[in-house]
Image 1: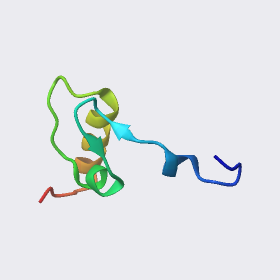
Image 2 (image 1 turned 135 degrees about the vertical axis):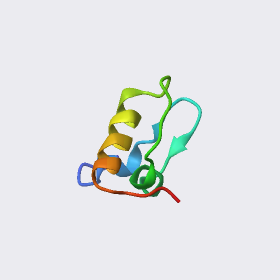
Image 3 (image 1 turned 30 degrees about the horizontal axis):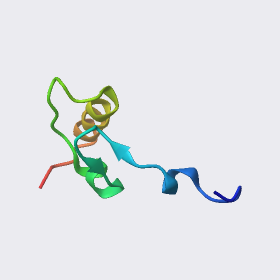
Image 4 (image 1 turned 120 degrees about the vertical axis):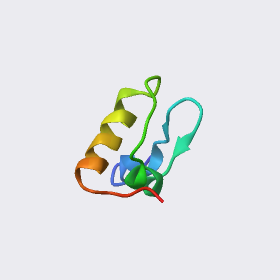
Length: 54
C-alpha cells in the first residue's frame, strides 16, 4: 500500500460472518449478545444519534 493511501480504504470490517461496509455501519442499530464489541458500540452510538434502521 502506498504511504499516501488511506488505511481505512484497505481494511475489511467483519464480525466473522459478514463484511460490513461504511453504509451498513452507519445504519446498524441492533445487535446480539454474541456480536463483537466494536459492532455493539457502533449500534449504541447510532441509536444515541437517532439513526433509524431501514
